[in-house]
Length: 213
Ligand SMILES: N[C@@H](CCC(=O)N[C@@H](CS)C(=O)NCC(=O)O)C(=O)O
Image (tube, rainbow, N blue to C red; front, top):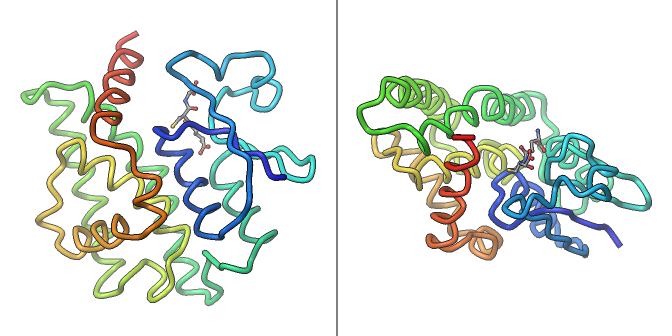
């Protein structure tokens, strides 16, 4: 059976967790807890020498890096498709994924550690606004970035946008992104994988201490 190494509070693990559940795949979950430094255990380092979750092992094949895992799941288990096939929509979905990883994820730590009056926080918010404007333009009046189809673009961007909104970034000036964010959170799988606010607060505190080291 497919093995999934993850932690339920890790937003990057959640990308893969959501894809596995949306595709209705059967898998074995193995929790690796960064709060107990379990990603540095020798057995886990053999799976991922870069000590990151998520990792999957399927049919003896070990795969690290969430985007590579999503691509693998899509081509190996295409029954519930999470990737569009037409060129324009595929390009849009890929842009959303790449912009999330390249421009948005790095803006999360300042939201966690910087004080209200910090220049670094103001800069992070400006950068997030630029990404939200771009996303807003790409999404337009569509339901998802893949149009009618829910895709890996929504999974990757959605997890980052949920994090920034829970960390206090106000989405109200991007009404279509705000509505899309609510739409994602209403999905059954997203509700099933959404940690409680209390657990999220505990995780944010752990990240705060980690980043200060
Ligand atoms: N590029 C990796 C990043 C994964 C990542 O940063 N995971 C975090 C949890 S959200 C992690 O494992 N942190 C612990 C560590 O790096 O030691 C991916 O997309 O899979």
